[in-house]
Length: 140
Image (cartoon, one colour):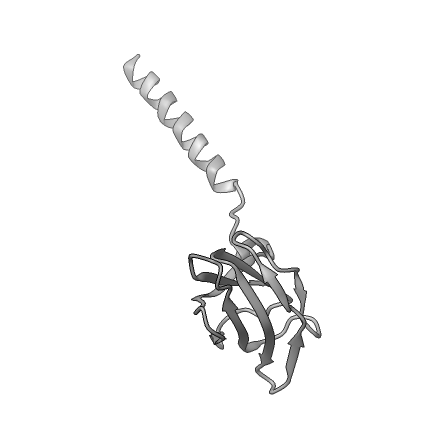
């Protein structure tokens, strides 16, 4: 009687374990999910600052970019995306960003593009008591 109950329990556990193997994974490699990922983070000086976000040649091809500002207030002057094929795209992002702000979603020229680097010229607004921190996100 005990063996029968143990066998039934083992069969039930094996069935449950088999069901978990059928649940799809959420990784991009298995499902083709397109998602946002962090390309890089920088802390901005109070004076005029130029930062370069270098992108690994092994990084995915990106369709869109977006900027997230935390910490202090940011004054954006210029943004230029440099592609691996030698071309570049000037992005009109001039303006002020408060902590917690996201930039508009930036559509990149072409379909999916290999990015070499993204260059920002900006400064932390002087009235801010904290330096701005910038996170560059890429949509692939």
